[in-house]
Image (tube, rainbow, N blue to C red; front, side, top):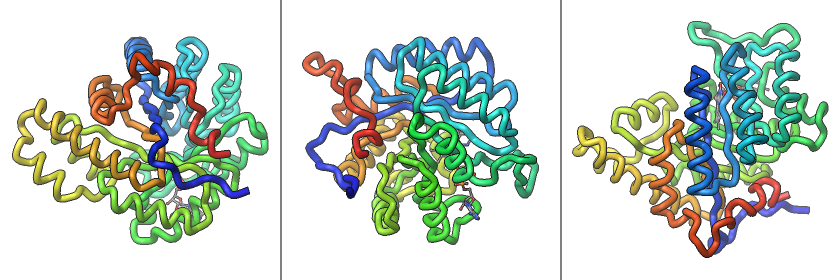
Length: 315
Ligand code: FAD
């Protein structure tokens, strides 16, 4: 049966929050309080927790965070998992810990090459590409986990000039068993919409979830866009550059720009869910949702919470 990949404009959009793992246990504690407050005031459909490529202490903090947010805070949680420099035993431990805490969503990633290492080699017996990890999780856990993969509307540093190959690789990840796609951040709605059309033309039918990065300061905005090598529409520069030294104004105008971006994405019919990169901040995501009219009201306080996850709904 054909999956539903175009969405009705009247459907109320849903949203989710990404959090990264703080470097200290005190930072993690503070984050729990923030996650809980944000949950109470906005009701995201799910949250996800990043993974520090390469394993080590920070990956232990990732699994702790997933466990607490899923089983103590009661948030539907998605765990990122990378396979760079990760022995299979460590991947097994992470997946088992997620499963035991009740987490049923994994974003399966390759991870970036370690800094100062030009080319990347898989560890002995490890995985080379995200699709290998997807296949492994599907084989080992069947349908227990919903599995997401990363999408790059503006290309990946290793395929900047070869978007077609990148789409082939995206299709391989979906063929290996992934059932949703979360994208890299972007600010150009036209590029995203065209990419969605290309993704669908490839026969990829799983839900696409756009990654939305709030604008908090001008420096951070430019730095992140340059880091991901994404196109900044001229309108963003025209509106933000003249006020770049006033952080409060940048946040206000930046929020309006991101809100119009979100509206255009929703109007395109390709998506019905917004994934917000919170950068562990509370206010910026809240301002975006407020201006989009997506904060819960007294009439429908549990609406978002009760909605089925975007990828489960489409299956
Ligand atoms: P892949 O899909 O495996 O692709 C990696 C590269 O290999 C691509 O250039 C692809 O075209 C190429 N490739 C794939 N298959 C083949 C093949 N068969 N033959 C030849 N080439 C191939 N990083 C983290 O460390 N932690 C995180 O928590 C994290 N979260 C992320 C969340 C999102 C939504 C996104 C978009 C990225 C995230 N990343 C994270 C970054 C990600 O790990 C890097 O971008 C990484 O370089 C690529 O990961 P991938 O899963 O897309 O890899």
